[in-house]
Image (cartoon, rainbow, N blue to C red):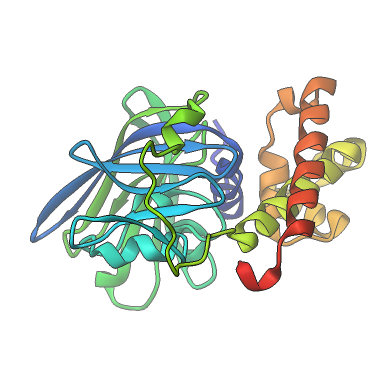
Length: 284
């Protein structure tokens, strides 16, 4: 089994925004542990609960956050608002994937120390990689990434902090989970449109669409490349994208080549372009 490269792992994690999944995340620090149940829809919707109580919910348009006072309020600020709850080291399920997630943020200022190494997590094929964000050993971190979804399913640090994802399942999530029966009024807080997230997803899907349209050229580049990193760089140049997005293109599963899958991708691209065009950038 050929291990993926670091850019490929980051690409898979970025591409996980196109997958629907659910699971449980436990964040541990020397001071204790907190557990969160989460559901994510490929449409960019999140639901996060703690001990059966909704902490964070977004349907892609409006965002609701339970504050320290225990009240659930409509909020502006998207995922950054969730960190305001005070979650130990500030890590939440929203950091498991995507362009604003932990892995993508770390990819800008890290050094790969060791791996990737294969690892079995609850019967799932995963990859662990050791990273350093500075010269101090205390700043090293081991990240474990699920091979099928691209999700971060484990984080371990020498300082004793860790994150563990269990019960991970990738399947369709009922849209009803992202609707509150008694949604609080917005008051003077503006409705969240999260235009930046939509633009990032549009860029990703557009690159996937371009890669599928030019799949013969992509495959020739891969076949001629000396190694995986060279292939990623070549595809990035071909499609005029960065190496992270190129990694997403190369991580695309063969089933995405089907006419049905390409038609679904084209429809989502059209819908996203229409929604983004209707939004005021100042509302993002």
